[in-house]
Image (cartoon, rainbow, N blue to C red; front, top):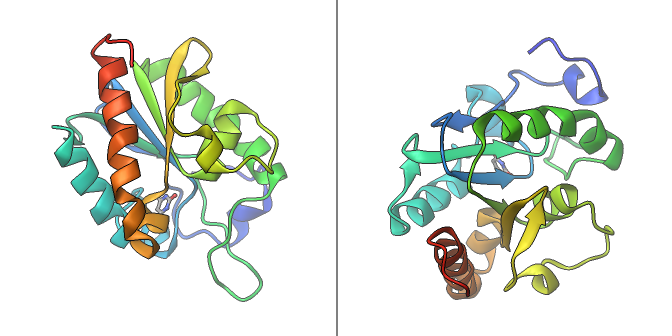
Length: 181
Ligand code: URA
C-alpha cells in the first residue's frame, strides 16, 4: 500500500492487491483496477466483476472459494481526462514482481488471463498480438498452464463473444481436470 514504484501511486485511493483463497487452485488475472475497485480496494467489484462472478459460478467456483482474483497492476490507471486506460509498459514492469510473488505464494494449478493486458504481460508477448490468436490453446506461465479469454468488460460490450469465453473456460476446466483438450 505504500508502493511508489510508478506514477499510478499519485492518484490512487486504494491499492487493489487481490482477493480470494490464498491456497486457490484457480487464479484469474485482469488488467487493473477501475473506479469502483480503486474506491473499495477489491478487484472486479463493478459491472465487469458481476459478470466475472457469474463466470466463476458457472465453473462451480466463487470469489474466495478455490479462486483467487488479481490484476496486472495494483493501482488504477487513468488518463489526463480521468478515464480508465490500460497500464503503460513501464507501469506493468514496475508492478509485475508483485504478481509474480503472489503466484509463487498461492501456487495455483491453472491461470486464466482475462483479456489482452493480462495475457500479454504474463506471457511476455509482443503488444500487437490479438487475444483472438491466443485463445483456444494452452500457454504456460513458468510451468503452470495458462488459458486466455476475453476480459469481462469487453464481453459486456460484445455479449456475442460470451459463447467463445465459455469454450475457453471449458478448455481450462478440462486442463485442470487433467484431460488433454
Ligand atoms: N477490470 C480489471 O481488469 N480489473 C478489475 O479489478 C476491474 C476491472
